[in-house]
Image 1 (tube, rainbow, N blue to C red):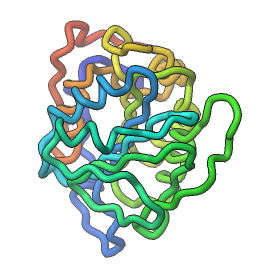
Image 2 (image 1 turned 90 degrees about the vertical axis):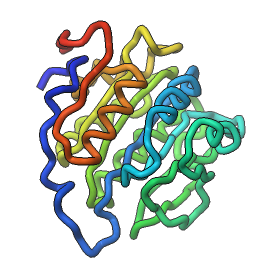
Image 3 (image 1 turned 180 degrees about the horizontal axis):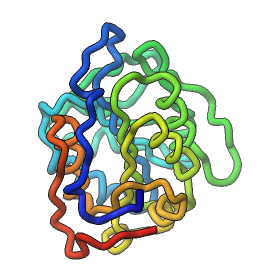
Length: 225
């Protein structure tokens, strides 16, 4: 399916209507970004309600600088914001932040932190986390790639779609650094290309099983390869 800036065609995902006893049946939204990502994170969170029943995991692609997102982002959302620690339980209606210099995995309903597997060059922490989600999470997966350098995350997007997840890239004209969303689009496995505000709307509609989302983007209706 070609990517589009019109999110009105989101399919109704029947997995959202099922319950399981695993404790891993609610949606997870992975938001991956780096340079310029703060602007996208803020615009996204300011448009997300605090009761939509999803866990939001922000995987910021940092090489060495300690993250401050867990101190900055609480000003822009009513959801609790936590810096991830090893074995922290994943719960809905919360924002989780990856610490610097760690690979992030999920296992048995919690987070697992490991030493970063690519210590030199650009890290691939977004790719690592998305691949872990496809293997160890039962609920709906939504992968969002926003502003940043390099192409982290792109390699895992086809896998997200293969397990029934939805993939979204930030529109290039709204990204402060378009390398990362461009790489995601170039993967051929992006479903929708949206502004941060429209991404928030899409997440809400997917999470609530409404089967559609309206995009306010000026370019709505354009298809992308």
